[in-house]
Length: 93
Image (tube, rainbow, N blue to C red; front, side, top):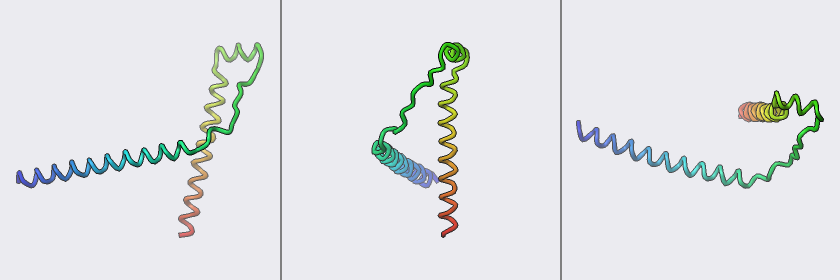
């Protein structure tokens, strides 16, 4: 029984080593692909709201809230786009 436990332990360590190597390799490839992407084409400038805007901005970070809302909206749109593309591909199969 001890021999089987030793073999099982060795197999688990081997699978963990292979999985870790493949995971690291996969992350390096993904990072390399992301580096190939161009920089952001959007030129985001802060909105100038004057004195009232600075007063409101002091109490509530509206510009950050709007930026995060736009970011989340973009991610949700991207999610639905990918979802519909995958459904279309599944429908063609």
